[in-house]
Image 1 (cartoon, rainbow, N blue to C red):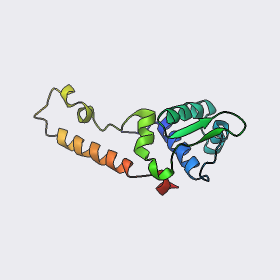
Image 2: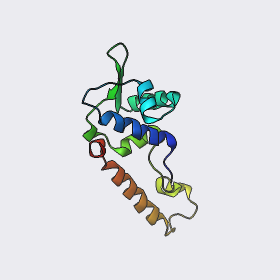
Image 3: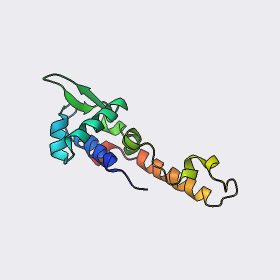
Length: 131
């Protein structure tokens, strides 16, 4: 399992905003420059995170992007799910019926345990902790 580059950029985005004063806005252009993200990709990430309720976006002279809720209420799992979906250790961990070796496969329980551990760990890391 490897975190996609877009997910890494999304995590950088949320962390950058979490480290700013509460309610502070920035632009996608500034974000892209500060966090070394291609501008077009930064805009796409902002769109996805806004749709997921992680960011809020407003137009106009006092607009920009900001966190939609406090950093303590945003987890790494939520950001990952917004960008690439839940992390997947093995296809059989999310769709056991797709495996021709089920229900006898002894490895299935190992994959399920790892899947649960990864999701639990990511869901307990908030951006307040990282900031």
